[in-house]
Amino acid sequence: MNSATAAAVHAPVDDLQHHFAHVRTRSLQLAAPLSAEDAMVQSMPDASPAKWHLAHTTWFFERMVLASVPGYRSRHPQWDYLFNSYYQGIGPAHARERRGVLSRPSLAEVHDYRHDVDSQVLALLRAGDLPDAARPHLRLGLQHEQQHQELLLTDIKHALWCNPLQPAYREDLRRDLRDSAEGAAALQWHHSLEQIVEIGAAPWPASDQFAYDNESPRHRVLVPAHALADRPVSNADFRRFIEAGGYREVRWWMSEGWARREAEGWEHPLYWDDALQREYTLGGWQSLDLHAPVAHVSYFEADAYARWAGARLPTEFEWEAAAGGRPPEAGNFADDDRLHPAAATGSGLRQLFGDVWEWTRSAYGAYPGFRTFEGDLGEYNGKFMCGQWILRGGSCATPRGHVRASYRNFFDPAARWQFAGLRLARDEQ
Image 1 (cartoon, rainbow, N blue to C red):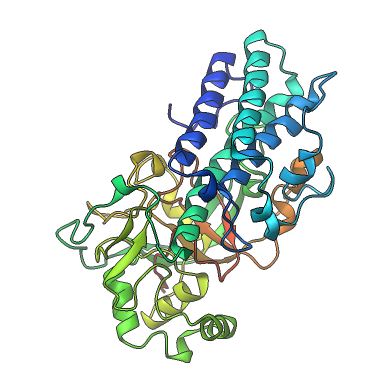
Image 2: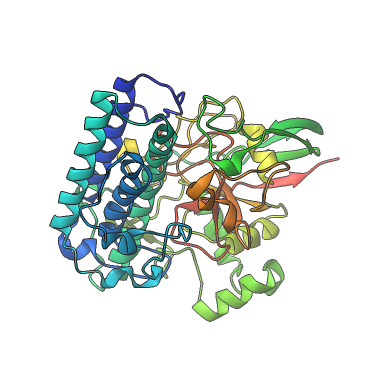
């Protein structure tokens, strides 16, 4: 089933049952290659163990959906503390950076928990007993779980890379990625005149089409004349920056980025080897595909490259204006089971969706007239609008159909473990 799904709140029950079963099963499929030991590893504070992802998404459905049913009682009330994330309005939560110490409950118990909650949700849907007020929470929960599916992949990639053995997440993903295309075409520019554009999405659930609260309301923005590169920056492009001394020239870097580069010894994108010939992937170490988009770079690295190239990062409004009207389901997504960026093909503006999230120069903030979701869900996005930067478009680890032109992802500017790359932009008269 295509998970673009941003369907009406009052979609047929059969569609909602199907979508719920599909998304919940997909998480189990992504976790299946992992041992119980793999599933509890936490390699850094920003990442979470796979077992926690499986449990937290289940907790969301229990706490936000089942708990709305009169008379519902949790079978594991003490887990509310373990698997809450940041919903302070609901109650206290276990420290994020210490999720890796949760050896109990076991992985088997977490699977039983998922099965129990899934059975209850599906029974309510089949019987038509799901309260109307819980339907938006259920639909949001499915989108939330798809976000965690991507995090499960990026978090386990970092964890396995940190292991001295650096094993593959899946051996069947191992392939020689070198020269996967005849060669990335020379970068071309797509020109746009100054214009007023409609940005964002109508508020959901009042609108039939799903969107997070941070995507709304839809509003007009003046976008100056500019040009966008027709494809993301490739590994070959970025390697030239490294070989030209880009990581040693302070003039290309933001002050905070330079300090982080020095403190952490950045010399190339995360997961590249020092010889700039190989990169660590979910299939293990593989030859660097020079034609594929560069991935696992921070905002600071993306910005430094853009300055070195005589360009800049696009604003999120420039990006959305270019992506609007294009099919968001096109591109290389997690469903394609490559789980790694692919080289660009075709002509025109390419790879706006899938392959790599694209850093923009836009800070994460509220749109004019922004309102959070009601109730406990109001903590979902709004309270993070400080010190974060916007990325657009989705990646090779994003479920197909989960993103749209208005989708706003956001991360700390030093984050490198996501499949994040960049597209160049430049000002025009």
